[in-house]
Structures are given as C-alpha cells and as structure tokens.
Amino acid sequence: MINDIPQEDLHKLIRAAEYDLEVRAELIESGELEKPGYHPKMKAVHEENLKLLEDFLLKYDWPIPSAHGKKAFESAWFICIHAIEHPEQMIRGRDSIKKLLDNGEEVGHEYACIYDRIALYTNGTQKYGTQFWPNNADSGLRMRIYKG
Image 1 (cartoon, rainbow, N blue to C red):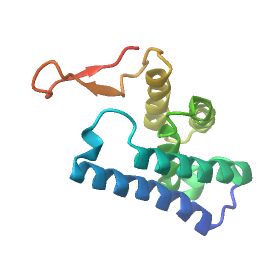
Image 2 (spheres, rainbow, N blue to C red):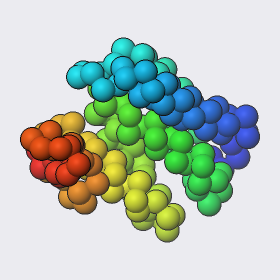
Image 3 (spheres, rainbow, N blue to C red):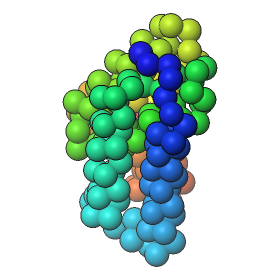
C-alpha cells in the first residue's frame, strides 16, 4: 500500500461521498427517492463515484484510516457500498477492508456493513445484521432484517 497520497486526491474521494449525500437529500426532499426502483440520478452519481474510486485504487490502494484519516477511508467505503450494480467491486472492497482490519485498523463496523451489503444484493445471508428493509405490512415503523 502507498502511504503517501496527495491530500487533493483524498479530498476528491471525500467530496464525491458528500455529493452523493447531497443528491440523496435533494431526491428525498422532492419525494423522488420514495418511488420504487433505482433512481437514474442516484445511479449516475454512484457510477461516477465508482469510476473515481476505481482510478484512485489503481493508483494508491485503499486509504488507511491511521495514515490518511478516517474520513478519507469512510468516503472510499461509502462509495464502494453504493456500487450496488457491481458486486465484484464491493467484494474487492470487502477483501481490502478485511486486510486493514486484520492489520489492526479500526474498521470493523465498515467491514460488517459491506459484508452484509454484499449478501443483501447477491441473495446471501447477512452475518452481522447491518442492512435493513422497511416492513411495509404495517405502519412502516418496524424494520426487519433481510435474510436473503
């Protein structure tokens, strides 16, 4: 892993994750995100962010929280877990995060989330129960764990 990553490249990852949240907030505010299916605007953001992450990883590998900051790491992870149409990318991300975890980095929560997220989108069974779907059978206030 390369420890010397320019701040501007780390900032690009952070900004991409922030932009995802901004678009999501706009779509929630307008009521568009409540419609079934993968919203085209959200999909476009996820695809653009994934390309940025792929380029970053080819050049540097995963940002290490203790070396590059937790925010840069979390941004890369956030982009990766939203690559829902690219499970192979999510699996590579999970494996990289597992290596960081095994090397003593405090990334257990992110590892558990990406592990379960992959299970959610590949019809597997969650191990940690981190991914939820709304229970629309009643008031929508209860949540059920998706078991695949």
